[in-house]
Image (tube, rainbow, N blue to C red):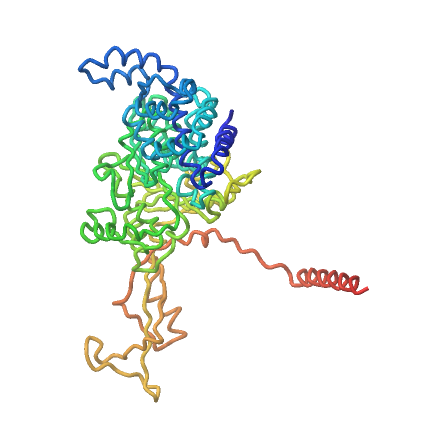
Amino acid sequence: MNTTTNAAFVWSIAELLRGEYKQSDYGKVILPFTLLRRLDCVLEATKPKVLAEFEAIKSLDVPIAQFLIRQSGQTFYNTSKFDFKKLLDDPNNIKRNLISYIGDFSDDARDIFERYDFNVQLEKLDNSNLLYQVVQRFSVLDLHPKKVSNDAMGLMFEELIRRFAELSNETAGEHYTPREVIKLMVALLFTTDDAALNVPGIIREIYDPAAGTGGMLSVAGDYLKGFNPDAQLVMYGQELNPESFAVCKADMLIKGQRVENIILGNTLSEDGQSDRKFDYMLSNPPFGVEWKKVDKAVRDEHEKKGFAGRFGPGLPRISDGSLLFLMHLISKMRPVSQGGSRIGIVLNGSPLFTGGAGSGESEIRKWIIENDLLEAIVALPTEMFYNTGISTYIWLLSNRKPTERKGKIQLINATEFYQKMRKSLGNKRKELNTDDIDCINRLYGDFEENEHSKIFKNEDFGYRAITVERPLRDENGNAIISSKGKTKGQPQSDANLRDTENVLLSKNVEEYFRREVLPHVPDAWIDHDKTKVGYEIPFTRHFYVFKPPRPLAEIDSELKGVTDRILTMINEMAA
């Protein structure tokens, strides 16, 4: 069975739960059972050797785990005599035997099912006389790695999570990112490092602070293995959702990764990797999600640690924590002297321009750009994600830019690179194929200007927000002169006539004022004490192509045709 067929088969098992479970709770049963069956299939071939080794050494004073791991060929094992097929041989004791089977997994594997509070579900299934039927249905599902690759397994989990999230009105986008978007991000992240990554035996570390089910880490690992089979990518991550964390942990176990590198918890309030820096980072944090729950922890770090913490540049508005994740990733960059780092992160449009000069968002953009960390931004097609049709952007950052990119930022408009899907999945109606990914990656690698790629200097995105004042006047129209303070002898300003103007950093403020303001309001002046520097990235404006309106005669002709048809229909109805 392929990925879609497997997902459909597992979905059909969920129908057994109808009546005993609410649809929104199906995932509490089906997802851990799917994980259990996967682990069962992975260990199947080496199970006899593990059991024989266990019997031989269980009474000895030796570190049992390392011997059993060696026999299992994995980073985990199971010492129970049961597997899915043997569980079916004793229907009357299936709950007790299944609990025993799960309890005989090694610690890391057993923890996965504890995250689901699985024993509670087994009790409920047994009381409803459904447990045997569920085990029986799963026992015929072949999830052996030779039949179902890790990538296909990840896709299957993500499809199931999407379906269960829809049933419970949750946001599927909080769990995972479409695989083709991840493949594009990974290609963009690694493309400038091809020579270094091709070195035999090279070891690199990658991190995702919103790991979900581990899709980004898995795709990155597969990409590097395909490029250099001798390379090793050590994976780290953190995930807030316990069920997604369990899936990610299971995936890491099967891949032979160190599962202790995956942390459960809120990245923004509890940095599980506080003492680490990474070569590469990938993430798709939740779009437009407020950070009110972690407000105190984040503000305390910002105010007490400043730039020694993660949030020194500033704090965004409480309604969107995307830029907090971005600053968190930047804090994990290795120093350039240790090789530096590269980051790929998916964000919605808000972080590009939200907030005027002096706001938290603008200060964050200012700090990133003035430190020359932003390398490129890629605009993706709309309707690419399962939970939203909004515009999304891949930000690429690096503290080791190639010489030709220093002091510059590339904008790539990839909104036209997509294929329409034959069948929508939630809000996802478009997808990237291999050619689309190659074209976008080539636009980035070529670093040239064309209709899809624009290159700017860092300062092109900066501006000065100047405050334009006009005098307060008395009833006779005369300017009121200040009699005290530092403005003594100068006209008082009229707050009702106060205005602001944004002047690009590349422009002379005084020249702009004389040219654009004084001809209209000759009595105006600039209050330089109120001038602020801001940064924004008006992406769409730079790719806007003016389309002249159709000729009026053509529009009139169409309107006349519509009117004539309506009149004809009315006359026919009247007749």
